[in-house]
Length: 145
Image (cartoon, rainbow, N blue to C red; front, top):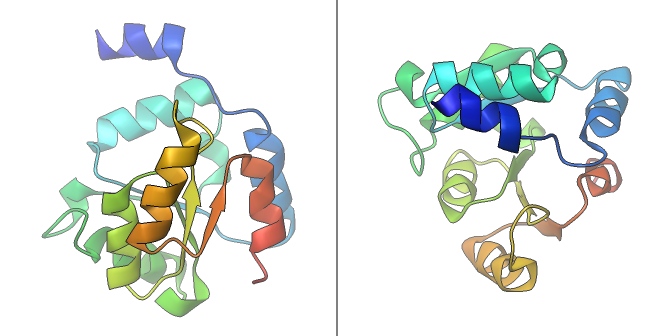
């Protein structure tokens, strides 16, 4: 049932493949940190065609506590071999923003898929997002800040 719904409704946001490719070309290691089950994450990455961009995947199944605890993002940093302060989390939820900040990682709020992006931007900024973006290509302009 989930796979059927994903097959018809799940799509990569415009510019995602190009953005992930540019990040990889610049030597940036990419990870997924999700509160979803690993099987759902794997399915979503496969259907959207972006699985090959990611070096590491951590889900709530891999840690003692899921988001808003920092465990998932700390595990991603550990697996990537970098300090949390050298990471950047891109999140679309307040729970994820809270988890990133608890891990000591700056968070970028993504509102590009939200139906009420202006209102959601205010919520993510209030939760502590360092920047708010509505176009995934904006990540490239924010990675050095």
